[in-house]
Image 1 (cartoon, helix red, strand yellow):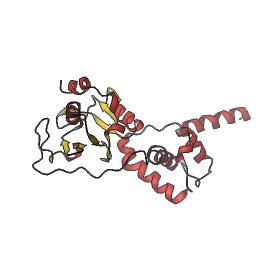
Image 2 (cartoon, helix red, strand yellow):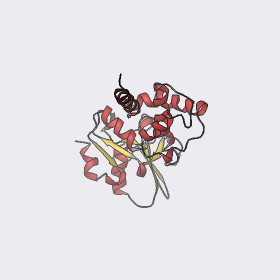
Image 3 (cartoon, one colour):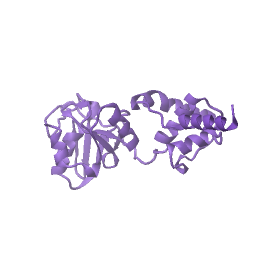
Image 4 (cartoon, one colour):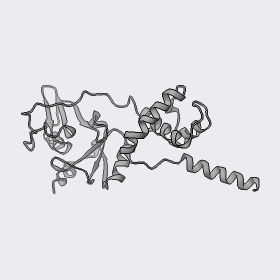
Length: 222
């Protein structure tokens, strides 16, 4: 084999190795992120993820063994995904306590008992009261009618159930995942997670909070 062909093959292999892996978000949450975190703590020195401008640049640095021990492809991918999609965005979102409700608490929009659907609860915290809902769709309906004196708007990220600030979240519309009241806005803390869900669950639109209109919300009921 000529030297030229050898370098072509090496270049092709590196491109395939470092390309963004196409795993479902559920698989990453359950398998790859925990694996990557474990590898990072055991095999790596401290890595400033924010210095890298892309996933590929980060992967190249890991492949060059600048901060971690030698890793096979599977472990390298898990580590790179954990660093890029979890550690890199850590700190961008304030941590809120779990959203809980009493057994007699009802959604003010549809009247549904909230305790039956704990993974869909969302909440608006006003200066003088907290109002909980059975989903983001009903929360947004209430918000458009009562937009003043709000301290926080809280939603739960679909995969992790982490409570996040709605005004910093990304929302997928018209997916094949339904909430207690049918079509829903599904929340994610970052755009990458929203895009993965969008592809996995046949979503039709990704919106940030400020881009959501009353028309978008009420069309979900049609």
